[in-house]
Amino acid sequence: MSPKRYVRFILPALILANAVIKLLWLGRNELAHDEPFTVYWSQRSLADLWAMLRTENNPPLYFLLIKVWSMVVPFDPAWLRVPSAVFSTLAVWPLYVLAHRLAGVRVALVAALLFTLNNYHYGFAHEVRGYSLFTLLATTGMWLLWRAKDKTNNGLRAMLGLSALNTLMIYTHFFGWLAIGVQALCVLALPELRHLRRNFLLGVGITLLWFSPYLIIFIQRLGTSVAQGTWLEAPVPEELYNMIWRWSNAPVLAVLFLTVILGGLLRSRVREAGIRLALVWTFIPLFGMYLASYAAPMFLDRYLVYAAPGFALLVALSMDALRIPTHSITGIMVLAVAGMAFTFTPGAKSVREPSGVVSTVDQWCAEDCSVEVVPAWYWLNYLAAEDLDQLKDDHRDLLLSGVFVPDQEMVDVVGPTVLVDASGDRSCRSIIEALRSAYPGVDSVEADHRVWVYRFRR
Image (tube, rainbow, N blue to C red; front, side, top):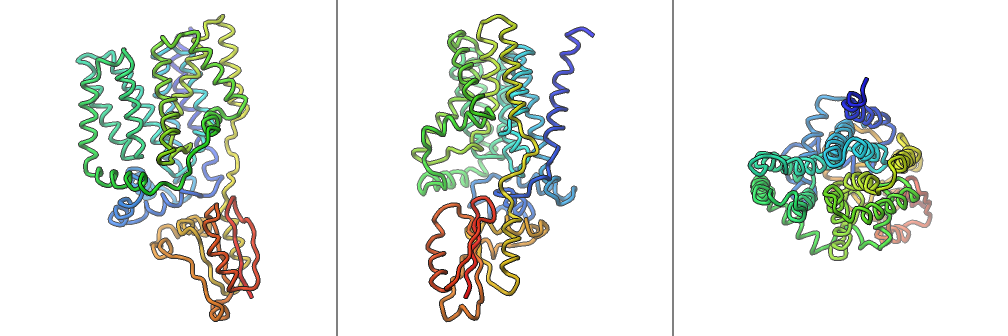
């Protein structure tokens, strides 16, 4: 079989490999952190879901998808994670074809493998959250944008298709607007795409029109986040390197990839269109979000998921741009892929196991006692670990509840109080001190990662 015939099997093989890797071990880890939130609200009525979405920073698309999906599959963590695994699997497709169009088969294969063997993307493939869908849509958008440059009529039809895809993206995650902003920067900054400006702006206008029913909610949530702040803190400079580390699996690979990128930029003098596209795609979101976080903290690994495929593309393109003997470039590419494979840890056990919290509470509450949870959203983690089917029931009373602190006269009536503190900081300290003043005895244990359980008793 000739080499050209082998090429046609590369993309199907990559998709198959991604599917095998990302569909394995889906049920190994418990539903934790934000996953029970997604599952719980996907089981609510549309009226209740809509009421929640008006006060939360979550668009509706992924909740509706899980709502429909959960109607036709077993109500089980592995099955609930299948859509995320499939979306992450499919994301390798537009990344490969974009890289192939920019620099050929070798670069496309390396970019796809760097994505496939990345623990960061693997993690999102195993979450009942919308980040893998966001990744797929953002990567497909960059491919559609680059493909449009060669279309007739200034890519009008392609821009309309991009507009439809962008609509799905912003209904998946609000930061989809930042991904659209990256597309706009590419159109404005890259000479190869400037002829698309008018039709691209037309497409953005159409996307805005489709988003208009949700625009008031988006503006309200944005205003609240800017005015009142977020739960995050302003980042330190080290966080920039840590983000590259996450995209590279290991510190030594992060240094290697940054060195390769610098070498590729110097050797190519940033004249190659693909490198300029990947630079905008990767580093504008990275540094832009970092700087913006000093005004409204938002610098979090998952919020940059739309830029991460650009990093894999940039590394692969930079290797190809080193302008050293071909066998040396091939050696560097093999070394990079081997390093990613060696540090790739599919099926690794999560640090979060809410069942440990449930087990501790059950042990300490062998007799009647009062169980309190702070913050209230952690009730969903607790209920999911206790019995996942409980997320099908309405628990708004728990989600709106505070912590009951009995006075000394009520202690004998109430009995022991068990407090689950999942705040991860000292914000719960006043509650703990109030309970200490009511009870003479206290036991404590870290029952899960950064989740402490206290028992207050006579």
